[in-house]
Amino acid sequence: MITAVEKKLPKNEFKSIFWRSFTLLGSFNSERMEGLGFLYAVMPSIKRIWKDDEKGYKEAMHRHIAAFNMTVAPSPLVMGMTVAMEEKAKEDPNFDTSSINAIKVSLMGPLSGIGDTFFWGIFKVLACSIGASFAAEGSIMGPIMLLLVFNIPNFLTRYYGLKIGYTNGTNILDKLNDSNQMHLFTYVAGIVGVASIGCMVAAWIGISTPLTFTIAGSQIVVQEYLDQICPQLLSLTATLLIYQQLKKNKIGIMQLILIIVVIAFALGAFGILA
Image (cartoon, rainbow, N blue to C red; front, side, top):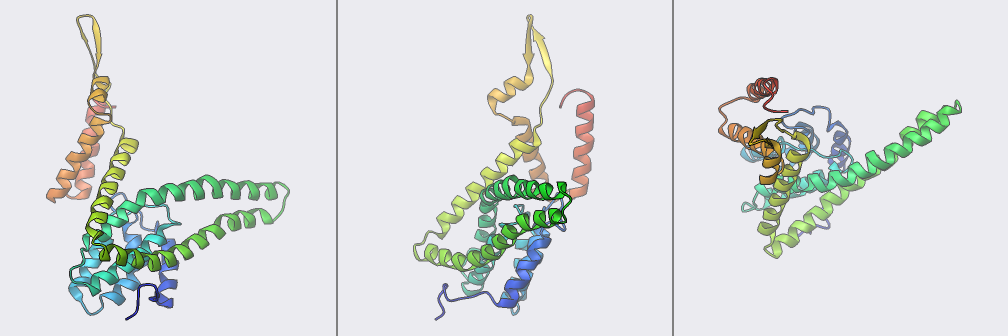
């Protein structure tokens, strides 16, 4: 039998996924973020794996159109692991397909942290500095150096990330299955994913209230008391209410966005929320 180490992603698929990974942000939207771009990138492998199983093919399509958001350079690592897991799902009818998205979500935060640090905090600044120094002297090498310094590590990270993600992804899965730790890993991955979403809620939403009351000569600041109960309590409450409505599937995304805008405008106009 062919072991996980010996298995290789077909060359045409590897090239296709590699180049398609550059379109990850091409269809970015507020609902699924990079989800559609991720599906487009791994589509060649999805077609190969599930070509003789229409139901499995449709389910795989739905899996990978889900919300996904990550620094684009390390994303092929996740794509490689995803292809490896899809192959496992096809080979093993008892494979838990929910673990695929759970692992994707769990890797979004850590890999984005690394990617943002290196590509936006180091390589971009370095590339702009070197490019600007050449451009200040009137050299045509200015824009060329900028593109080279930023894109050489970008291309290498994508190429080897996809390769390592696929080969090591299957190895990791084999070890997890052999030791019966797949369920535990999936459970932990789900916890990490939920924690990442909680961090995003606290960092990005930031709903607060400017309401104050005077009782017995003492000024009561409502937001201070809410923060004592739970920091970003209003942001958490709003997120849970929105999630509840999405889960019910009774209101469309655009309708929900419109309702949020109207409510936020009204509450802001009356000085209830900031």
